[in-house]
Length: 450
Figure 1 (spheres, rainbow, N blue to C red):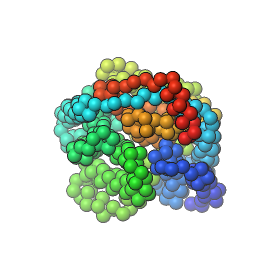
Figure 2: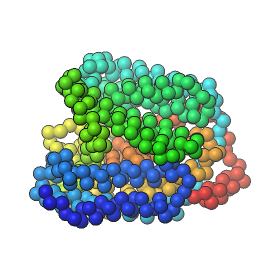
Figure 3: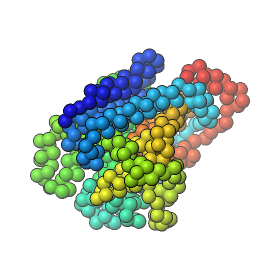
Figure 4: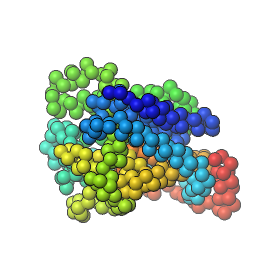
């Protein structure tokens, strides 16, 4: 296949535009900045993935691979990605983001360690109970593992398994709360075993992304608390750990179909799997390109209706049997009729499916404003509010997730994982409102820091 030279130019421009603001505007604690994690995700999805499928077309999504103009479709997707990245930085450098960070309430608090431990234990017990119910519903651990290949459809189709699967991930929430307790409140030997245990449990439900989130948020908490962890070597160690975990999870999934022989083959393929596990397991760019092709043709423009799906998807179908079809499912029916579940097309792809080009760029503008607001809020609160680093860690990971997921599902993901932290805060924290003088001083300090 002849690769258009403009594709390499666009990929280079995306990488340059993603990196240049960090070089031109250096700030301490780079790895703790929200924009750092968003740009990392962006480069993987919109630069490495396109390069990968141009060099290895057999790994591209079959819908766009079958199109005669496949290279030109990739170039079109790269053009949109470059435009979206430019709009993101425009939003980031607007004053609106800083004002948002200054407007968020700042409440210092004194957290009761005993009550925080109670909150961790409650999350753990509820999660374990739901996990046991899930195992019984799916016919035991073997039955649960056997549906990993079609986990989304299997859980959504079962009125019991779906809510139990989500609630069982409270085990992961308990692990993050425990690590926060260990890092910010009081040393606790049980925090690390709990994190490892929760990773294994959540992984059996196909939640590789949830496990990656637990370890990523743990690293962010460490980096926010101890400057020595803001080194590249620790970040590389986290990245390698994520790659190894993804490889092991992939081997486990293969074992559900091919048994021990498949696991042995996965071990032999380990070097290739390590290099391709991220770009090959994240076809969101392909699905964005497919969304550009079908929008207004095979799929009518949603005109904003996809963003209103948050309310019905937040309620378990056992409680509210409403029939709703997310934009990801609509896209899947158009590009992969025989598939299961949904096909997230990134924030830009969902926007395009709603309003065309303008709809694709506006979410990136708001994403830039949101990132700047988070960083401004952290600058104001991390030395005054004990809970702020934990909330910030949740927000950073969820914001990165928002770049390649669809809106309502990403918001649900964020709210569900934020709920245990807010419940623990409400149970264990004693807050006092800032006086008007203190509030004005904090706002001035936040403006200077930002």
